[in-house]
Structures are given as structure tokens and as C-alpha cells.
Length: 92
Image (cartoon, rainbow, N blue to C red):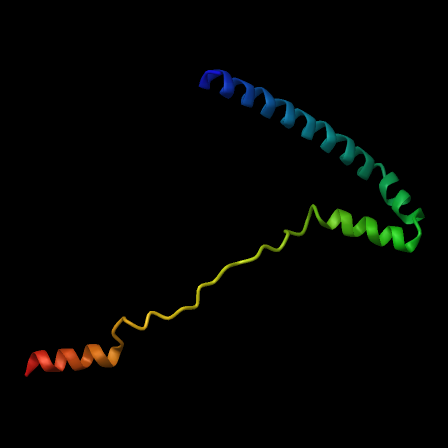
């Protein structure tokens, strides 16, 4: 398949995804602003209500990601004392 055809398919897919997202966003906004969403959530048992809030928070709060930190010191690099000693020796 030629590169142009792949790019065209990606563009069509992106347009469909954007349209689908917009439809879902509109439906969700209508549901929320009508007050029905709050009423429906209020009617849930406490455990299910809490589960609903946890699920909704996944869309708001960023997911923590692990970070790899390399804490190895570069012991071969000269320290300030070594640099000062070398400079003093050069001036003698």
C-alpha cells in the first residue's frame, strides 16, 4: 500500500474518531446539564456511588507514572578541591 493511501486512511479514521468523540461529549453534556446525572448518581447505594466517582475521577486526575532516576555519581570528574589544587600548581 502506498504511503499516500495510508495517510488518507489515517485522516479518515481521525475524522471519524473526532466526530464520535464530539457526539459522546454532546450526549454526556446534555445528560449532565439536565440534572439527570446527579439524580441518577444520588439514587445509587453508597458503595456504587463511590465506585462511580472513582471511575469518573480517572478522566480528571492524571495517572501516576513511574520515573527512573539514575543516582550514580560520576566519581571520575574532578571536584572543586582537585581543580583548585591543579590551578595552584599551574601558577607556581
